[in-house]
Image (cartoon, rainbow, N blue to C red; front, top):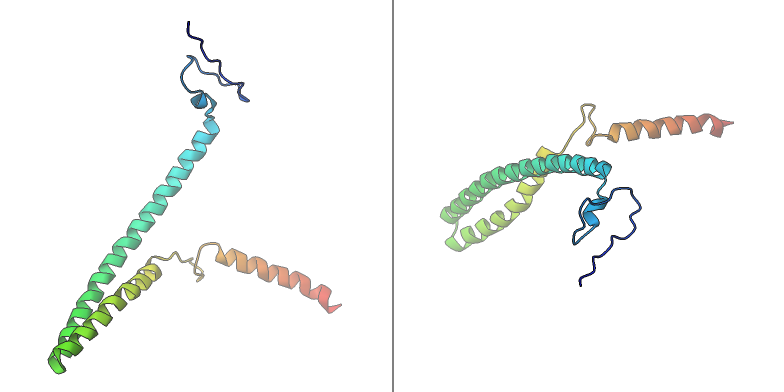
Length: 140
């Protein structure tokens, strides 16, 4: 004769309709589902921003590598093949760093008021207000 396992006492009042192998699914709260949906929506926005960053990086890298090849061929014609190769390799690897920096700068969020990130203006104005409120008491 097989014994049926009883579910452990659950702190919430949600109980499974049918006993199953696991009772973890019975404790899912609808509030946590809403939070998970909100996090998923935020994650989609981050993925889209990451995709934009990757696209801008690839475009700037392609342009940079065209410049590397051109400079390498120019130096090869003016000097020697060895010098052209060394110049090309130096430019080739430097372009990865330059393209990444340019892509990050292009896709970085900027506020309309001239700050570099959203919320930075609020922090600066809060800090200024705190400095101004402390100034009269310091003068006395």
